[in-house]
Amino acid sequence: MSRHPRLSAAAEALPASLFARLYERLARFQGDVIPLQIGDTYLPPAVRLPDLDLGIDRELYPYAPPQGWAPLVDRLVDKVRTRNQIPVTHDGVQVTCGATHALACAVGALLDPGEEIILLTPHWPLIRGIAQSRSVVPVEVPFTLPLLGGDDAAEVLRHVIRPQTAAIYLCTPNNPDGLVLDDHTLGVIAEVAQRHDLWVLADEAYEDYVYQGQHRSIASLPGMAERTVTVYSFSKSYAQAGLRVGYAVGPSQAMAAVRKMANHSVYNVPQAMQKAALGSLERGAPFLADARVRYQAARDRAHATVAAPALLPQGSTYLFLDLSAWCPEPDCAMGVLENIAEAGVLLAPGAPFGEVYGKWARLCFTAVDQARLDEGIGRINRVLDGLPRTE
Image (cartoon, rainbow, N blue to C red; front, top):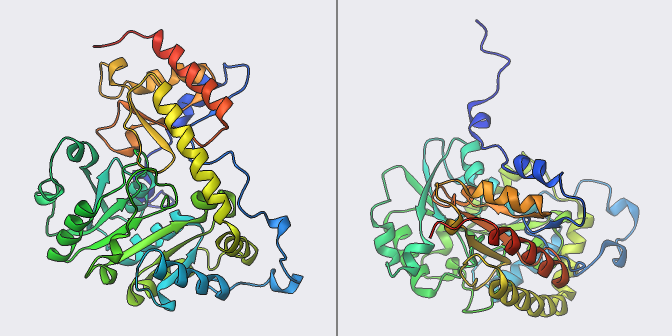
């Protein structure tokens, strides 16, 4: 019997979206739907396309340079060297279609099928599927809760390195719980990576939104620039998610491979979008300052008023809610989220952030303005108040 046409094993291994069940329940609600499930902002972008001098038509419609528009690349080199203290060269920068594309290119460039990538959980959900789509094996390692429970990062990582381990993925500030990795923890990860000759994929998409502590790039530590690919996003920093501009930085040899992956996927990022990104770097400081104040106020109010317990995020734009008090079974949080959806509020299910987080949910406190956020949390609390507790 013919083997074709059929779907690839890698595609079939990718998890289906859990939101279909929630949208079915949401359809029953008549009124203002409050979308707290997606990581976005209600603020207008730092720089809008109509406000830019985009130049003459012939500059925009041809293909752009595959590495990135030269003025943007030059500015990114300066930014990464000065702010992040990463000794990057010009050929160590690659402009991508968002941070997701950057990470996909990095995984494809650095890991072979069958090799393992350690995911410190809770982790950004798409990194697992990115690995699986390239037949790379994701290995989830619970990290935040052990650290907060007093375990040392070295002890957490001690028993998870195997011969097939090739890379560690970290996100700081972390999506979904807002943990900002401190110098000690970054140093431990760096020591493990160097001792076992591993790559590090550092997702720093939320570097501009830190409320406690200080963000530090792991690639700035001694011996780490040559084994780290770091990823950034204009989506999160400057409210430009729809423009799809991100970038990756790393050692020249690795970035040459990342560039090949980018060339063979999207070829180049539209130049108009890159001009908006450059405009944000040049004129976006007031936006960042204002957004940081607004986001921290939203974080504080959301954390103080939501009925479900959550860690107070040190950075990022999320609360990671512990729904275990309403969940007797490992994955029963979906039932709670369906009830919340019937009240016109969407939250992101916890299971995609790590297999042990089936009783958790993520709330984005920057997705809507303060009045709608208050309304959404009020609806969540009323639903939870009406459910039996298991403790």
